[in-house]
Amino acid sequence: MPQSAAVTTSSGEKAFKIFVALALFCGAVAAFIYGYWGWGLAALFVSFCFLSHAFLLSGKANCPVCARPLSGLGPVSTCGCPKCRTYFRTKDGQLEEIAAATVADEYTFATRLPWEDLADQTMLEPLGSMPTLNTTTRPLNAAWPEGCCVCGQASTRTDAFTCSVLNKRGFLDKKVIIEVSGVPYCEKCKKGVAVDYDRGNTDLGGIFLVFRSYAYFKAFRKLNSW
Ligand SMILES: [Zn+2]
Ligand SMILES: [Zn+2]
Image 1 (tube, helix red, strand yellow):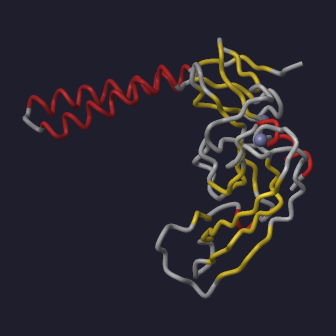
Image 2 (cartoon, protein in one colour; image 1 turned 90 degrees about the vertical axis):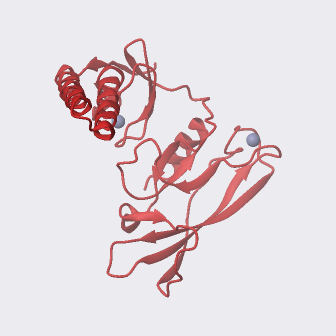
């Protein structure tokens, strides 16, 4: 039985955003009157952003699985709970778990890597970054669920990749080359798993293991409980 929760509108948040939008609009009008066109246009733009946010992204609900409060929900959107990592969509005022068979076009479903020191202040190594002596290699010891990591059919091959990240915790940047191997694929599929940011929750620092198949993501989390 799928779990769901009602999405309510946070009226305080909504009122606040409308108030800010109105204040900015008044500021824009004043700027236009006094001939500050650049400032006027900027204020008008930000005012519009606040106004659209007020009406489109003021929904909130408690996660139906772990009860963590979720906010900034739109009328039709997908969101992930940062705590229990269940993914939901909002529809008709309800937050419900997305279908298990969902395969996203982008890497969408994100789970933490097993290393505490890479959980924050860590970024993908930018292209052309300076070489550093402070480089280590880390193989990811993961158990991969059976079947292709994209479509779930019988796998015929495994794939491996590496990803370089920079950890900015210490005095010197630490470069870590993450080695991922044994990822199962069928003949047809590719690009099912990567190391990346959690694009749906960019305020969560650090890097994640990201998936396109929701069913495979869930199976993976069951096998790897780090
Ligand atoms: Zn949750
Ligand atoms: Zn496949």
